Amino acid sequence: MIVTDHKDSLVTVTVYGEFSLADYREFEELVNFKVRFEGEVNLLFDLRQMADFTLDMAWEEIRFARAHSHDFGRIAVLTDSQWVTWSAWLSQIFVEADMQVFRDEREARDWLQA
Image 1 (tube, rainbow, N blue to C red):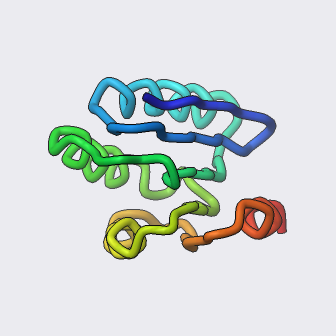
Image 2: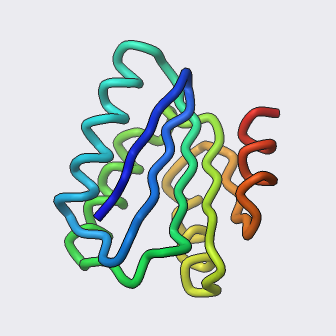
């Protein structure tokens, strides 16, 4: 399950439990709308409560990132997991945005607003 929020150019996604393809499609709809009508967006992914993700979601994330490689300014990932940190590092291959991994939400938000 995900909870999304958006204000100005920032889209926030918080994942609880399993991150599924249906969840990712919800995120895609929001980003597509924001990009179409407002331009480049910054993303905050809070993955601290994520238990796992589905393989089809991971594949869709790669496809979506490649299709929108120029639509993101900065991407902040909140996690305590080394595995998620490594996955975020790999995702940098597909997007031109600045991406950083954080453990502290305030630091992530400050970096996104800088």
